[in-house]
Image (tube, rainbow, N blue to C red; front, side):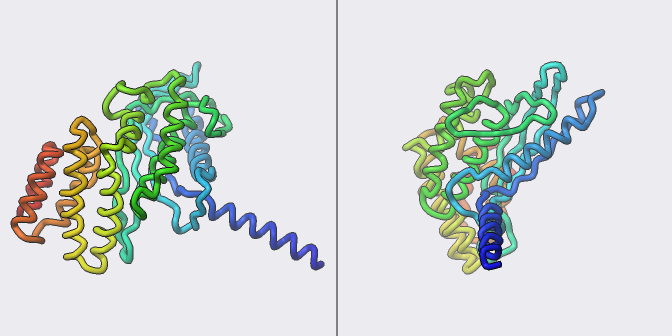
Length: 302
């Protein structure tokens, strides 16, 4: 009886450990409205397989409690499907959120569109992934974004805290060069998967990584305690880090991408708050970095 209780305890502990190990709480959506005359079961199976794969795989050696998992979404739109070759032509919107300390507010941690989210998938394929063997486009895509999201999340809680995980993302990208798909190669575009992680880890973009910590941890998290102090910290990190990163590496699109998904939040932070000098300072910097979002920056000056 005693041995039985020990076995039950060990099994229960292992199950609890397994449940708390995974880092992501991802929702996958497959939009196949553009595909006609195809049994929808293949898209349903794809969605279920992907959610199970990304949520049940342990991507790092870190331990995340269930309520600490990073909430993220993969909205995949299928524009072409070839049943004979099992080829999917898609684009995907990927976003991840981060809770703000002592509040019910969730802020965008990452959001971007991948226009080369193409892969091969046969119904009921088993999705497996090993770091040192990158031979499947679909699992490589999700591994890339898993590492990127976890790394950025860790950067938001401690300065450069995601370095090891982000290095895994770079290693995967390098190993994926042999895959016969767009998005992995250097100089292909300035916004593909290679460019995103390469720029993020570039020495000249260290201020951008520092921004991740200061904006979230000393800015938004602080605002729940002292809104004035938190906003001032955000002003300081935009000037010292975002603006500096933009000037250090003006061809990098990371500052523009960041301001694209932060535009509404930034407008709300400054609208009707702060001194006129502070508002003008922020307005001018954001306009220089991303003039396409000027209507949101105009809100800052009100």
